[in-house]
Image (cartoon, rainbow, N blue to C red):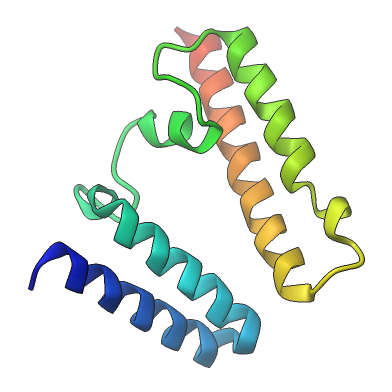
Length: 119
């Protein structure tokens, strides 16, 4: 099975499992996970989301050697984009996706800043 076929399988499995677990919102989240895995197969290497802090830099869309100011700027930009209050009057599935993405952005920012402080 090549990478393209594996990616399609991830999308189908993600949407199917999501539907069973959470209905349409779960299916949308599962499809999003499957799409992410299709486009980033390296995420499965070394554990589900890989290891180390590189994934946090990817979440914030900054280079691995970014300084604290660049990280703060990226965090603010993403927080404005994905904050759940921005999607208050839209589809509940979109609200859930925004909440999940915002939680991911918050975790990434907190981890990177903590590591910068420690060392």
